[in-house]
Image (cartoon, rainbow, N blue to C red; front, side, top):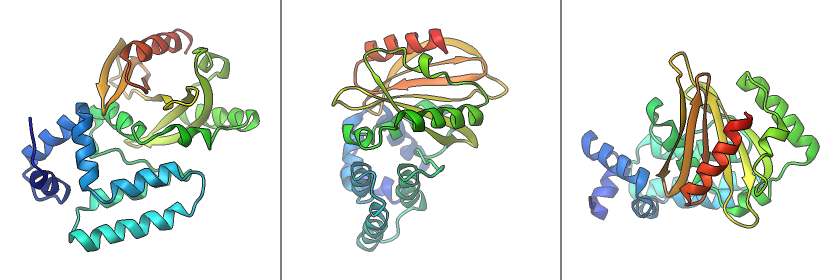
Length: 247
């Protein structure tokens, strides 16, 4: 399905009907080229990516706010959720607990995690690798928030990847633990864990491409897991199987 620039601009400004907006959002989940086109048309997206690359300096906050306001002045009234994306994504970058991943949908949690992970570049991780003491503390806090132990030795099972850091984020009022891995100088990977809720069911890992990234997800009845990164479903599937066997 194809979309004109005019239609995508209407989508960004909230001037398109809900059904067509939903079609665009669903296409963006699997079509990285369309996602890039939308981001290129949205002046808010560029400073968000620049902020991610600018870690760990906090001066990026004022830069992002100024760029967002400039985008407002140039494009008239923008929908609140577009501006909220920039503010809350940056909140995660700077260590806050908020996270915004597209328009909220409890059934689309995998796409929302992949969307957030797609902002990451190699420097995002290389500039924020935790020391041994800090990593131990991060795992302690994450285990407490999640309500289940996160054993460092188990998380280090994928020998080809280096455990870099752990963050406590949030998804639909539930904790979302992001465990970030470094893959040499390439784009990072992440294992994300959240609670499954009262209707959680155990299931086997399933893989799919979301927002241009390979993802493999599974549930154990109490918690939901997703391993995301790169563009090889074989890699995420293999690592997910390793992690599932030890977690």
